[in-house]
Length: 295
Image 1 (tube, rainbow, N blue to C red):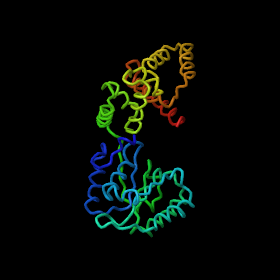
Image 2 (image 1 turned 30 degrees about the horizontal axis):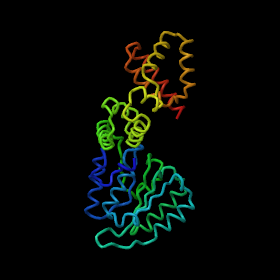
Image 3 (image 1 turned 135 degrees about the vertical axis):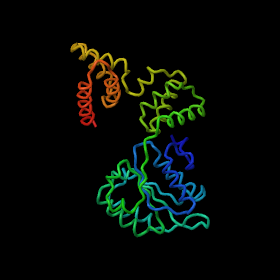
Image 4 (image 1 turned 60 degrees about the horizontal axis):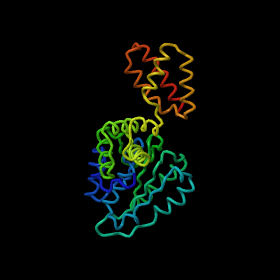
């Protein structure tokens, strides 16, 4: 994941609108406070790091960027002490670069409201020498006064075509043979999360080298083979409760997590010709309920 992390904005996968807006700030050498929000593994942290590299150049990059992960440093004291100390320190001005530094707060939606209120004042007071980039999955967990001080950028899950393109590029670079069919399966499992896809590809490579097949993919993904799930659904449909119990017990004893199976079950039910539309919608409603309770 780190080896293939983009170092330029042009290398960011699939976020065209965001990249176009950020490019303009490279020309003006000025950026507002930023909020990047969207699902995991879609390029939020990579984008701000790539932007910072291009803004400050490799020479000043390390001295002008401070990255804090808000999930382990989220109390009000950390904001008052550590972040405030960073924010008020002026930076040595290199003539061809901007005269501010950037503080990146990753996973900021896990910060307490108190610490967010303390952050609001710091953002205002030291904005001439410090810009904040707040990264989160859900921007509605950030308090309104902070949201109103920032430019919001929404990151979308990465499209399947872009994911396949990137994974193909990495497997070629690593001299790893991986068929299109298997890449499509990896993409289906990772659902728009490129980090998850790259990690998955690496696990396949580490475990099996070039001998990857569907069965092995199912084994390491924690997803039950769709044929097994279809068999379970058919037995349920035919009300063979003893056999259904045995299969469920086998899945349970094999240590499968139910969270991973919901999507596969959903796809099988929707594509099935055995059920009427009413039956399908009732089953899906039940699946939604189960998914909600599991999460």
